Length: 112
Length: 113
Image (cartoon, rainbow over all chains, first blue to last red; front, side):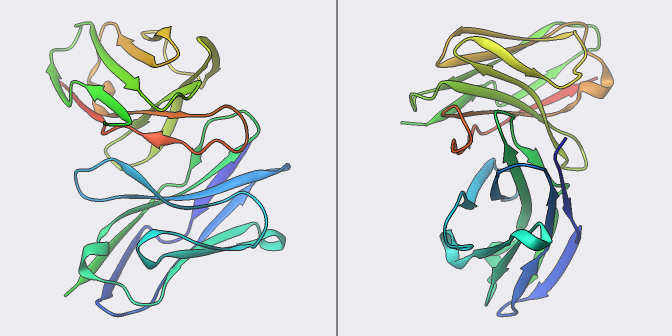
C-alpha cells in the first residue's frame, strides 16, 4: 500500500521568506505526485503535479516541486511567500488505479 | 460552469438520521471519488467509481453507500448517522488511469448532533 509523509505539520514564516515543505512517499511502482492547496474554508485546488519527464515541475502562484526518485521525495518550494499563501498544503500520490493517498497536510501561516 | 459541484454545502442533522450528499461533474470524466476530511484536516479516500462500477471501498462502514446513476454523478448516502461522521466530504473526478488529475468539489460540511 502506498503512503505519504509530510514532515512539517505547522510552519510559520514571515512574508518574503523562502518556503520548503517536505513530502516523502512509499510505493513500489510508478507514481504520480501532486501538491494540493486548501485555502481557509475552501476546497482543494491543484498546485502542481508530476507525471514524468523533468523532475522539477512548476505550478501556479510561483510554486515548484522537485521529484527525487532516489529519495522518494517531492518537496514543495517557493522562493518568496506572501500573506495570501496562508493555507493547508497536501502532498498526494496516485499509484495504479487507486485514488489519491494524501499526507496529513502542512498548515502554513504567513505573518505580514 | 462549475466543474465539480456538490449539494448541500452544509448539512446539520441528528444522530440516527439518513442523509444524502449529491455530486455532479461536467468534465466528461469517467471516474469519481468521495473523500472524507476529518477535524484534523486529514483526507482519506472512501470510494471510487469508474463507469458506474465501484472500484475502491476503503473499509468504510456499510452505513455509507455510494450511488452512481450515470458517470457524471456520484451520490453518497449515509444511514444511521453517528457523531463520528461529522466531517467535510469532498467529491472529486478524473479520467481513468495513472495520468488522471483529480479535480475536487467544494465540499459538504456535515455536522451530526
